[in-house]
Image (cartoon, rainbow, N blue to C red):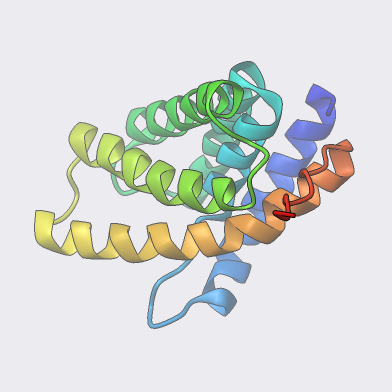
Length: 163
């Protein structure tokens, strides 16, 4: 995926985040589509593209306002893209459970980094909302990951059937 295309996709995910997240909210929990994109790109394309996706998504989210400040958003998202790229390169990316696990852990890690830099609420309420969002992002990650993998021509291996 070219960097210009990546920037356009990041801009699209950030543009639809305010409206689409409200429509996709379940029990008040909204997905973080730019974070899903960041970690998906990192897993599929590597740490450089993941870092770039994280920076672009954070940059495009700045006009929407952040509770904790610019530095917390930029650093947590950029770090999430880099770590996802390292994990995708070294650990796994061919398993259908990989996007769910990566997005769930990645959301918790990103939110923890953001909270450490700029705590905006009480820890218990932060933990509850972050855990719910992590699970939601993990569920959404599977179709988004598989869609991007198909667009990039990366196919998951067929499951082995014991004979």
